Amino acid sequence: MSTATGQTQPNDGTDLPDYPGTRSPRCPFDPPPVQAGWRRADGLTQVRLSNGRIAWAVTRYGDVKQLLGDPRLSADGHRYPQLMETQQHGQPQAFPRMDDPEHSRIRRTLTGEFTVKRVEAMRPHVRSLVDRFLEEMIAAGSPADLVRAYALPIPSLVISLLLGVPYDDHTFFQTRSATLMRKGTPQQERQAASGELFGYLLDLVKRKEREPGDDLISRLVTERVVTGELTHLDVAMNSMVILHAGHETTANMIALGTLALLENPRQADRIRDTDDPKVVAAAVEELLRYLSIAQDMLVRVATEDIVVGGHLVREGEMLVSGVPSANRDGVFESADLLDLDRDARGHLAFGYGVHQCLGQSLARVELQEALPALLRRLPALRLAVPLEEVRFRHDMVVYGVHELPVAW
Ligand code: HEM
Image 1 (cartoon, rainbow, N blue to C red):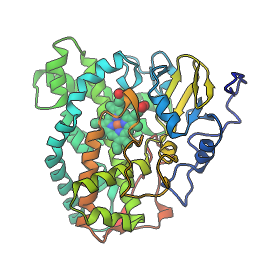
Image 2: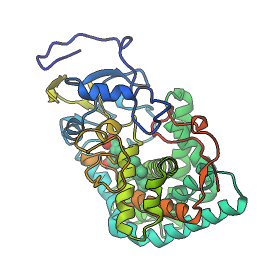
Image 3: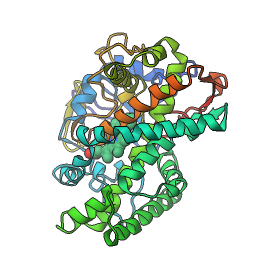
């Protein structure tokens, strides 16, 4: 352990607490209770990550923000292989695992696709998909698994259409994506899933080069590959990042958000009974803060000795940002309460700094459309099993529920 005075004792990790810790079955929306203790204690806490690596857990709001905005911390998986779950030959590095300036050079080729304006233009289309899946779920009859019938297909289809990936292949990319999101997936399985997904997208990139369409992959090929800004491999990798990041996260927010609203019926009424888009938008921000589903993915390495929260972190040491804990810090009044009327802006659910979520505007639009439509169309929506029987995603990098049995 090291302190602000710089004394370091090597630790082999065997006696360290596991990160992120175990959530309480009675409060499945709260971060693991152990993190509240770490937040109150001085300095940082040394932990063992689910892949066995040792890291400093950063759990206070101010510290997480400082850390994610500090250029002395690196996300570069090439330089620091300990940041990577899989090293794959023949694939370029994914830009979330790069540092600036290379990270922003690649990211800039995509930002135009995800501006508020571009995403707002997609809203009517998102709305029509929401209605379609809602009506299909209702037609199939109560009860239903909300994840499979509603929460997963909406973002999955949205991202497929945006990229130009045939939605008919959704079982293929959803299963590979889930394998990559599962903690502790054996290396061989992880590499196979990543290789298959990458190969599939590389073939698609080449097909789009021959027959471009009105989609993101075609635009990257026709506008960025011809200029030499990106290679075919880069386009395949960018597509893989977006496909992977773009559906599991939002799907889990829709499903877990629905469950949180079913468990807090007065709060659900706030969304159901309003026709004010600003009230819905604020409610979605609060759900993002309260649920903070990115439980286990914000890792970095210190490139030099730095002080975080009065605590010395040595060059080469790993840090993990506890976003769920930071969003329950005292900067938000009564932070453990879900209060859809509060101003939750400034939350860190999409991260912070140069790696802040590229798809956040799209995620917001999807949530702003999917949650109110569900509550209004099905006012009698209820959980079809006792809460204790819901399978929460403790085993995944992104928190949520594996299934959500609902009836109406
Ligand atoms: C509610 C849904 C979502 C949540 C909670 C979420 C959360 C996050 C977080 C916390 C990060 C920062 C990771 C880090 O700093 O290491 C991130 C990055 C990212 N997200 Fe999201 N995300 C969501 C939806 C989406 C969607 C819909 C897309 C794509 C269309 C997307 C694409 C990305 C990408 C590409 C990055 C990496 C950005 C970079 O490294 O520059 N996300 N997301």
